[in-house]
Length: 77
Image (tube, rainbow, N blue to C red; front, top):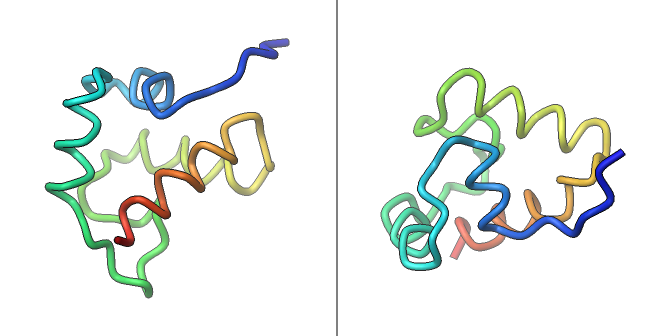
């Protein structure tokens, strides 16, 4: 079982996206603000597999849920 603490960088790696700090910041700036009526996993910029990973992480309250929530909050601002 993976017990390491996940970060935005590791989440982006898991999603197959560039994961450097400036790349994460650029992604958030480019896709913000995410409308309140759109669930993070339903945002149009995710691939099907990325969307599924996010949805599963939240539904199962997995180790990833906290950092997915963090990304969600950052995308709303």
